[in-house]
Image 1: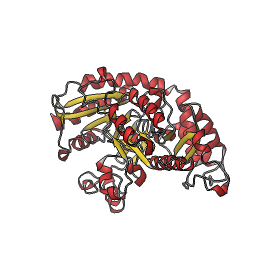
Image 2: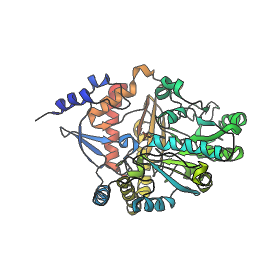
Image 3: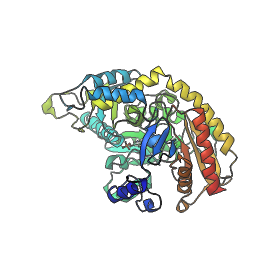
Image 4: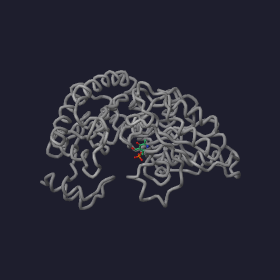
Length: 449
Ligand SMILES: Cc1ncc(COP(=O)(O)O)c(C=O)c1O
């Protein structure tokens, strides 16, 4: 029988893993996971790992959640897939009916795709074509600095993290970048308690210059995840909604990472009480079971495409797996569990406990500059000096060193540079939080002392 080491050798012989320097795998070979159960994953040797990053933020309700598994199994016996142009099915129709009841007001039309980047591409094209067909001369996009919206060319163009985008610069379209709020290192010398979103003036300045030429502004509402779980106030989003309205710019909310309760409310936009013109959802939508995404928009935008065929106004955008029934069945099961098990209410209670524990265990650590919290998401920014807030040199790869130690302890952390974070399934228990914190402490102490 082949051992895990044998499989690891076979893995790197064939597989080019995502977002990885494959040479790192010489020292840290891929862990071959055999099964999942709740917040836990188990490798071929039976070793347990606490998945506090929700397998790239998509696992919403734990691995191998029986209700989701059963939902998909039932659908498998009925229909696995059908072309979604000119054909439809009840799981998709009913899913839209259900989502309509929980998404921000005014969003009524659902365009299905199969991953987050695709949903973002769809939103950009939709915004561009909307203005074109309405006779507006608007071709530019705006975004926040340090934003992340996926890794296809359009999504990278409105993302601003050099790590992902810099090399492809000549291939990307030119977007206008607005300095994002930076609450930990606020350039206005404010803290979260006395903030009046002074930094919004940056958005106002750019809108004044480019607002009339811009089709849409895309944001990750409240949480810039890939930037290191950077969090900004709901008031910023509220002001942005008003500014977009003033200039006729469409607001695209990328809720791919924040949707479905991650931030403590169903959607991050709910904290600000705003409705975007276009909203992208994925990840938690199917609980991390099936690749599915949806770009949702308003009646007003939809109507700009609705015309006689020969006018050529249709939205000619498609993906083979649009509206996949298995994805829809997973999404139905997720909504069932969220409702029946009062997941959000319970997660908000657990979130209080996690926040408390984070501050108790790490608040006074010499290298923890800030602990920030939104819903169950907790992030710690590591610094060399708490006074100056100087970060570790990225070449030291401190986060990566801690990641490797945490794996030995049975914890999946996968830090973002110098930022360690927990973004666990909403079903995590207090006991599991205790275990995750204890394992993090061991790993941090080994590397940072
Ligand atoms: C905010 C945001 N937008 C878009 C994406 C891209 O989604 P996908 O990886 O499914 O293409 C991600 C993925 O992490 C994300 O966090």
